[in-house]
Image (cartoon, rainbow, N blue to C red; front, top):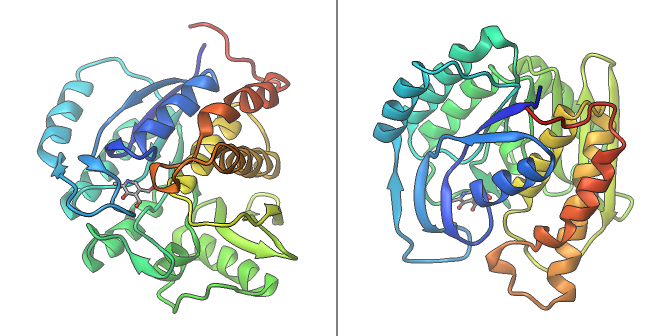
Amino acid sequence: MQKQVLAIHDVSCVGRCSLTVALPVLSAAGLHTSVLPTALLSTHTGEFTGYFCLDLTGEMEKIFTHFQTLPLRFDGLYSGFLGSWEQIALVGQVFSFYKAQRPLVLVDPVMADHGRLYATYTEQMARGMGDLCRQADVIVPNLTEAAILLEESYQEHPSGAQVERMLRDLHRRYGCRQVVLTGVEREGLLGAAAYDAQTGRFSFAGKPTLPGIFYGTGDVLASALLAGLLRDKPLEAAVELAVSFTYESMLHTLDNGLPLRYGVAFEQAIPMLVNALASCKTPAPAE
Ligand code: PXL
């Protein structure tokens, strides 16, 4: 049976991030992807001002009410950018509702970057994001989000030992069996560090640093990570693939001289993702 995912993110009309990234990446990986949109924005909030933002909490409740009447089956539940504090509890209810199906629950606690909360996030929402992480199998915070979740001060360049301590503490505090920390630098490479509590193993995947501030790369990485995990790659290999896919998307953006605020050219890296998944032991058969 073809695997199915429910992606719970915002729709940012312009500026490749959240659902405009998750949907094509998961679909390219052969996964049947359904969506539960959390908010509707004209652009992402990163490098634009004057954007329109509509919180869809009320609509999500109605959509979920209908979902509950349908025989839906999900192998993966994937949440990202959320629109309100009330919505966090609703996403928790969605996770609980499908729990008996034993889906892989991946929470990307999207709320901050570069040491600062995103414009639409409040301290209360940040605390609520921690509650959602408790329901996840896998979490994918960046260094800023990890510091918020651990209630400690943000460090831009933590040492290898500090990264391992943060990964283990995130696992202990939130109970997630796999933790992936993004934006980690090691020996001149930038990428992601991971801890798999099932094997007790730490790993790191990195690529050379590229110039500029890139938007949407967290969504590109987390979506490719989930694709790899649902196609039965072990955590280390899925992280390696996700970092390579993100790096290739960034390279295409720079090679084509594209403005960075519209997100990265992940479209051009899709063939690489599809090839890397072709060798997976779980093919993506038709339904
Ligand atoms: O990429 C994360 C993200 C998702 N959605 C919206 C955002 C951001 C980051 O800035 O603003 C609306």
